[in-house]
Image (cartoon, rainbow, N blue to C red; front, side, top):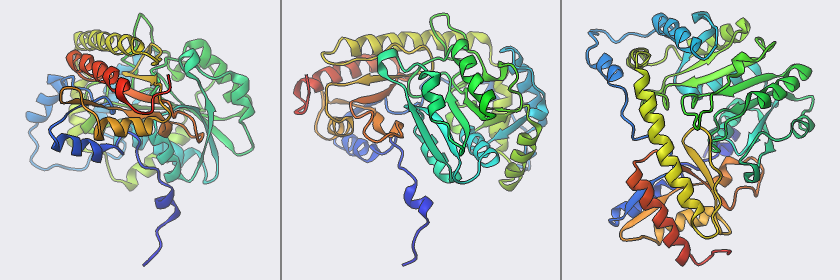
Length: 399
């Protein structure tokens, strides 16, 4: 039998989806599974985006330009202006999801064997993207004790070696919900400048900042036009996860022109999804106001509920729609599986994402799990009750 590639062997399974077989079995047994494991909002996709696809008069579904539909890229420049980001359509490559944008950034800016520093815990698929690109993730650890703030700059600088080529951040953060301040980002920019590194920024949760906070984009950092690559997506902004439309943005012309070559190799991003994404730019502000209000209510219900459970600790996130909870258990991998296999409260149970898969450092996150507050409040209230009841009977609690 032929031997598979090292990449195939090294590619990690998704910690977000690895428990799906247990969830499916629980459902087949008649249990109601409350899905807090994945960032799939139940918020309606804007009507204007859905109507654009329904009403499109297309007789031949053609390839689009490899960089994306020109009118959509032009429309995005106006969208970014409201955040003080001054770019042209030529600074944008439309990608098949934010995932492809980050892959393109890795392919363009790093060679196999190069290193990228990432504050952990981080979006688990970054590990998979790094394997695909043949690069090495170097983690710098944030902690639950201060809500997963940016680790001290001195700690980040200690990680820099001759192989270090980039730093990657997610802001607001997945899975932490932490929102980096302008001051934190300016401190980070000093390292980028001093060591002439690339700075990749995943800002797909830009719209979801709470308690009066405003996002500050790395595109607005002074003196980094040639260093910064912005990764974006419509998936969360407009609750359009299935559209798979993202963007790679940079003022560095060489990065964009090189990324376009990878875009040409995959031909083009999906046409109908771009039509929906372009129309979504007309979404009224009232949509985002309502969504933000709802997420704040869900966040408060979940975080306050979790902190009311004996032995559970959960910082209040300032952005995105995730929180991290520390549970009084030895291993959330086992606890999360046990919830699906062996527990229910009045026919209900909860699915979470164990956090160990969101770390690159072995052994970290074993007591933590990510929860996504993407379901209606009655489901979140029931989830909290389930977790409280579960910990009362779980055989491996560590109170």
